[in-house]
Image 1: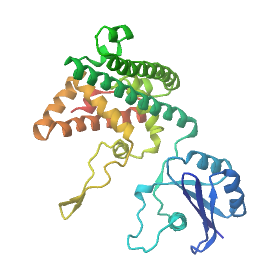
Image 2: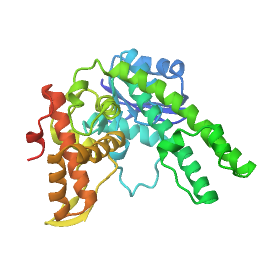
Image 3: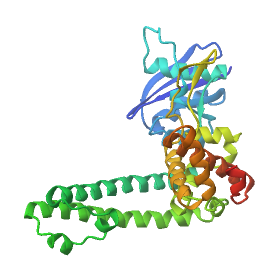
Image 4: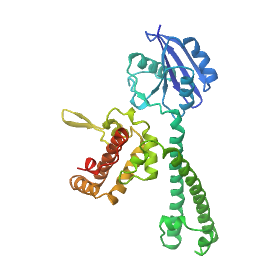
Length: 338
């Protein structure tokens, strides 16, 4: 008898449900988030298990890895793609876990991608770098705001990064104001040191990967953006077509139509926000260094607006990167911007 296992994963516990071919519940229990508790209760059902469905939440790594190591066929459910009947009077954790098992049995489970474990830590390190960069930007803006408020003067971010304790003292600000600015400067400096460490580590991890140097041939893509794209995209073979990759990068429209009329839009945030950021950044830089990209942008802008035109450039670059990684060939501007 085939059995289907659904696990509704929470921050501190997991609801485990085992069903059979007729959707009858064989076992259900709420357990602590520990493999020592979950694996023993699944062991009697291992041989008959078709698969285990785990909801893709922020903390799925330990559970999915542990189940795979134990020999289970694991499926990562895509929460935003799973819709339940809205007229249900009751819905709870056990019902959700049962529904996951039910979708697996029917072959209708929307699945997320289980990123390779050996690449996952490096990808998360790149995300940590982005988090620190945002924190550094907050400190820079705070210093800029203090300067503008107290003196009416403005400094560029480059000048603010180069500030020292002596240069702050030389501004002649009141003691408390100077102390506030110095606090921002010290934190900014500490963040920059950690960012430098992470960037050095990331480059050493990624520069030997096939495709890294090829991605850097794309106008607007340097070391940081190439690293982000390589780590966030993962194996390009997981995208059957270029459209799948472009959609994952959030470079395509989200639209619902009926009888030729717009009926709303879909989930515009469905996809990878880091790749979306990377290709929009690449598009901005490409306009500076690639005349073909600039001409394409101007043509689009004349018919639409600046944001749509810029996103069109990002879409072109995303498509180009897909073919570069798939064919292992350098960037060709004539194939990208025609």
